[in-house]
Every structure is written in structure tokens, then in C-alpha cells.
Image: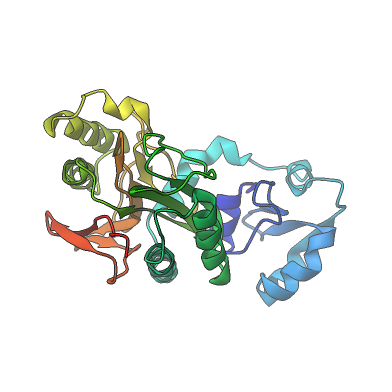
Length: 320
């Protein structure tokens, strides 16, 4: 019984499962050996059939009265709850298929292009909210759902999750985005204005996470090696406790968020968005690991970068 946004969108190849970004999916799927059944809110069915689903899926739809959540209707049909097989489902969607990887590559590139297009025109006197509106609008114009848009001006860069305010950007500002299209989520952080004192060392911590994320080992092993990078770079060894460090990504912002207890296996062709942070510093991009190394998906050649351990990594874009 698939009832979450990430599982349904993955299973149905990128179908938009929402109306409200904050609401539950408007459909649920009962996946069975003798065929799938789609439980769809009746007031959403015609649109989904016409615009989101494959023609052959229309005959498998059960229209559910709007007052009954599709997940409840699916559960009444009987089956294994998604929560009971969460880990196997994550494993099933961990390695991106070629078509998924191409969709992800396009999403990552366009998300990065939006950040370049908007942030190169940012000014110190601009408010955090004004910049948030510009980024959100540019993402939406490309069919990308702005799931998360965080902006911190110079006075607020110490916050790890800075919801935007009317404060000005000032001399240095951080922008964080999570954009979704076809169910996949691109995660990226960019800085504008002056460079940060710890930017290079934060990149080195990120590299500790990347070097440890090897197919065949467990996620908690990669996590342990990554957080050890803080002390190795002269940061407080406990810095990792002050914010999550990211982890695998794809159909969820983090799938799952890495901790010392997440023992999912890392596989070839899996997407990651590690995001080490320190006060006033952070780095984050969406990447795929495979036998050829790391492919950075959220890449725009116009953004200023430095080469760090063989990868082009973003640095702050000066105000014009």
C-alpha cells in the first residue's frame, strides 16, 4: 500500500501527487501481483487521468469520495502498510534508472541555472523575502515546486534553517533551495557577497563525506567518517550535532537523513546531498555516485567555482 509522496511518485514515474505542498497525496496505490489499483480522490481523478497518468492506468482507478482520504480507502482494500516495508522500498528506489537519472540531471541543471540567474542580480540592500520571491517564482516558471527556499542575510547566517525575513542581505547571504519535479528533489546551497572565512575547510568536510560514500558500505559508516572531518579540519568535533548532515536524496529531500543509526546500504547510481555546516558556512549540492566518480547534478557553468579534490565546487558569487 503506497501512500507517501515519495513512494507513489517513484512508482508512477514522476506523477505529481499533491495539490497542497503541505497536504497528503491525492492518490494511493495498492501494488499487487495481479495488477495495481489506484485510489484517487474523485475531484482530482479527471485531471490526473488527462494530464499525469498513462492511458492504461485509467482503467485501474477507483474514485474515492473527496471526504475520504485515498490512503484510508487503500488500507480498507487490504495489504501491507508502506511503513512496514519502508527500508526495502528505499532500497528499491536508491539506484537511479537511466531515465530517472536524465530527469534528475535536467532538474539539477535548471535549479542551478535559476540560482545563477536570480542571485547574480541580488544586491546587499535587497530583503531576504524579496530574494525568496524571485527564486521561488523562477523555479515555478520552470515547473519546479519550491519545496524549500531559505535565505539568510549577513545578520542571520548563523541560523542553519533561516526562514526569510524583511532583513537586508548585507555583505554576505546564503540561499538554500529544495526543488521538486517529476517527484525528484534537487537540493543546493549558494552564497552571494563576500567569501566566508571557513569556506575552504567546509569543502574539505564535505569531501570526507563524499570519499566515504562508497557503494557496498553502510550509510552510518559513511556518516561516521564524514563527521570525523570536522575535527580533522580544526572545527569543534561536536559541530555535527548542531545540524543534520544530509545523506541520500531522490524522491525525498533525504532518503533517509543520515545518522549513526541508519544502516541502509549505499549502492551504485545513488543520489546524495551531503550538507556540512558551521556557523556562517555551508556547502550543498545534489550528486550521483557511481563507478566513474561523482556527477554534480546541480551544476551551472556560469557560477564561480574552485577545484577541490577533483570536483568543481561553488564559491560565493560577489555582488555586482
